[in-house]
Length: 159
Image 1 (tube, helix red, strand yellow):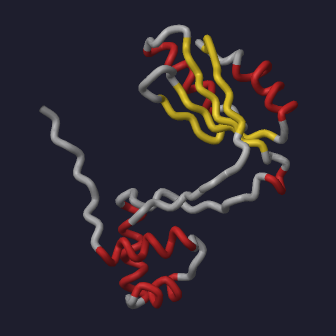
Image 2: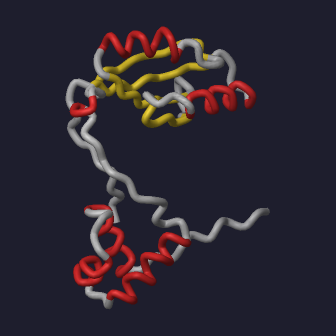
Image 3: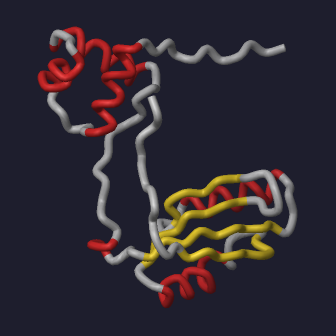
């Protein structure tokens, strides 16, 4: 039997660092150290170790979709015509190249994938559906859910 992968050990100080970094990924090392009660050198070493161990996977800017003409969020259930490895692989490879797809998750249940898509409006979604989504490998059926209101949106993990 294969051994379970060892998860990185995270202590309370690491959790404090991660909470602050989730709030402000551009914080200076000096300010992060002060916020977490560490010396700048110790703070730098801990953050470096968290990056090296893959706990911190990157930094990004969060953009306002409305200001960039991508205000309409759609969730789409995708049911494939066959559930074989080659169909899964072909669909996954294709969906990774589609910029309107923000997230794609293979799920268990009554359908195969759940997509989160951003477009400008319903006309753009109609084009996306007809020109892109239904042309993806293996797509048999889709169900669309247009978001009327974002009640909660976060990128922060509960630490």
